[in-house]
Length: 382
Image (cartoon, rainbow, N blue to C red; front, side, top):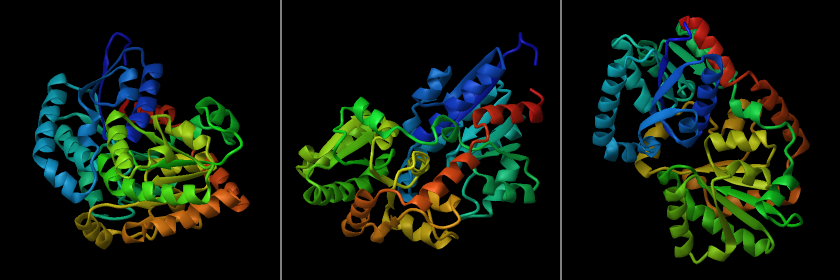
């Protein structure tokens, strides 16, 4: 497009992991085009790249059927307002990053209004609710996937698609410097470190926080010198988790940190975390991990009947064989978690798992935001 023309891109990210993907994408747009303008819903990383956010990203950071239903009137109003803002702005392109429950309907309205639409991060149609592919085809002009195995279903349905890998695979070195990160965080180099990540959403901390704290109490009894570090994604999550810690009188057992989740994981001997993008990050950092997840009883009753997969942690989905222990709902107990973490702290990462981690890491180094922007520019003739 002519240098004098602005490339107007609307973007919506639904949580902190989407904010990181979006920032990488917007940086690539800024490098390829001299005159970009971005609006939408963005976190701090996307805002640093120049995106004007009309609503806080926390508005979309919810999970579970009941949590969504409680917020539904607000979400519907927000989406209606945002749709009109993007149409009035006459965006050249809309990119929805993850958050399919919110973004797919938004993309459908915008596409009907003549705006080109992209969805970045494939919904889990290969895991559950496969019929969503019909809606995706109606709403999305182009799909960007993170993982190679996701392309096939879109190709089968004649939806333009490209796999761009994951920007984290580009950003993180193949072999992390554990000691360096311990020194930067002020941790004891000679004692074990457990990174504990109870999630970035309020609902995740609500269900997993008490479980993780109880596990920490038991682990500290077994490993008195164990350093348990908990990075929280923002002030709101920090305060929420700290309240749970204080209720259990466990302040002396844990070190809470503002942000720095990647540094904390890099410094660790093992990671206990909620299922999500952080599991991919822990794998790229070559850390032994234990993954847990809990939602409300209602949400689990619905999800469990729809799932078509046996595993939910990303490393297990990407590997030929299961690599990490995972515990969901009633199986996520203090006993099960502490048993596995104890083994990880004592034995470290198995050599065959490290080889598999490295193989997956290299397979995801496909260009990330740079490749995404290049593919979109070619497809849409930007």
